[in-house]
Structures are given as structure tokens and as C-alpha cells.
Length: 150
Image (cartoon, rainbow, N blue to C red; front, side):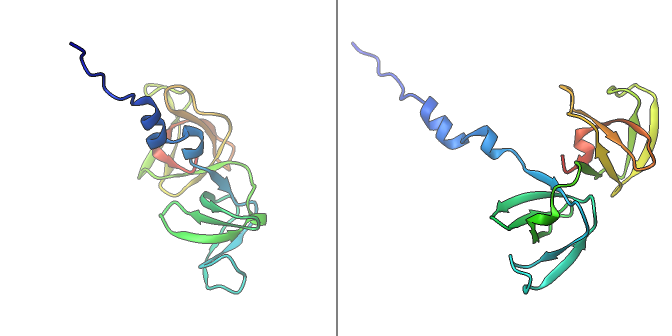
């Protein structure tokens, strides 16, 4: 008697999950202040002004325009020429403690409030700590889950 074998799930799993690299979030930072629009055109409605250094998640990428999401979740269009600054993140926790080393028991280097922009100075470590630097020059490590824009 033959026991029926289940259908291979590997190919189906790949189709459902897709390419992990393709699903990675694409964050870019504004290199200068720029207008955000309701559509990919300079004649479209103006939504807001994105300040220099603002991290934005690119959700649609065209030749000259990008549809982006800001840290509040708002969607808008921006000219791609305005993107390309150094990598920054926005603090999303009410208050975050930036540590001198990537450990929860390390000494506190400084505290930051929600909405503060921090420069990213390297890649996150294997435990989810991101090296950051404040505009005043103070540097340290912050848990990834406390920031937006990586």
C-alpha cells in the first residue's frame, strides 16, 4: 500500500513570501528642504514641506518622482532630486536612552525625545542596536524598535 505524499510546499512558500530582498523597506533621506505633493507633478496640490534630513520610506519609485511615507504615515510625492542625504532616523518612543555601548545595561550617553532626528553612523548590530549621532555631536547606541527610518 502506498502512502500519499503531501505536495511540495517549497515552491508555493517562495511564491507567497516572494524575494526577501524585494520586500525590504527602502528608506531615503532628504538632502534639502523639499515640497511634498498629492501627485507626481509640480502643478499638483502641495501637502507639506519636508525639511532637510527627513527620513522617508519610498513606496513607489519612478524616474523623476517617488511616492513616500513619512514617520506619521502620511503618503505624498517628492521629486527624487531632493532625496539622497545622509541616513537619518526619527525617534518614535516618547523618550529614548542612547547608550554608550549596544547593551541595555550600558551607561546612558544622552536622552532624546520623540521626533528628534539622529544621524545613523553604521549598521545595526545582530541584537538590534543602531549606532547614532545627535547634531550636537553626542553619539551612542539606540534600540532599532525605538526609531523610524532605518
